[in-house]
Image (cartoon, rainbow, N blue to C red; front, side):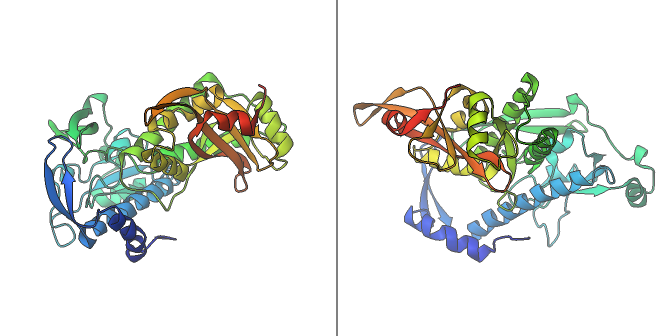
Length: 375
């Protein structure tokens, strides 16, 4: 893959961390549901499975964008399951039931079944023109292409590692077909939609002095899609590392927009962007109890409106800070006042203000080091 990471680079980077945390070699893993301990082996074989899945998911994300860009030419997508053989010694019978299904690119079916559908899965999605479908099946596309119906979609909920996981599926011939738990999404889909929306919105704004207000519906759409993206990044262990996407998280308004235009002369648009890789970084920090929780991160588009904007005293570091109201927590038997802090800064690539980080700070950080931007 272009600019991809080799397995050896991946292993060299992650193994020292695994060893440091005692997660390499023979590991005693505790089942959170039963409390029982089971010994597992974390070695290169297991790591290669994780690496291979990461790469396949990254490939799917790039493939999704490529196929969407060509949808006006090749609008028919086909689900391909690899039969049993040297390339796929243990095929999933459920996935095989979907083999050769052809639906339009905009059919809801692909929101669930695009690309690989589980660990070590070899399924894929291919696109075709009308002529391509006729050549493959020997009859016109109208006789081949299917259209999903609402009643075709099903779901099931399972308890996995102590968490309730709901997976979407599809009913074929009376049989319910499901991806592996957590795989019922199209890699790259939310990134693609956000990017297209971002491009369209920026194109609507002519110059940095232009005024543009998001409608209530547009804000709700940003909030909904952003929340879905955070959920996906929080629920899966794989990373679309080759496809770093900028997504829309809100818009600069009022005094904050005026402040940014005054201090960042190259600012192209009032759209606030969010690098998808920052979502993953913030979620990792949350595990250390220093970053924003997943639930808080999901609400960033809303919180940018609710929190108090501020700038750092005696510093022109190209950043704007948003603080929550103070709240109390108990640490080691002592009450402490804390605030959530969201940081946005000027991005040279997009010429927009973009999310930098989010974490929990002591209340004094706000009133000792920052000055509010009056709305």
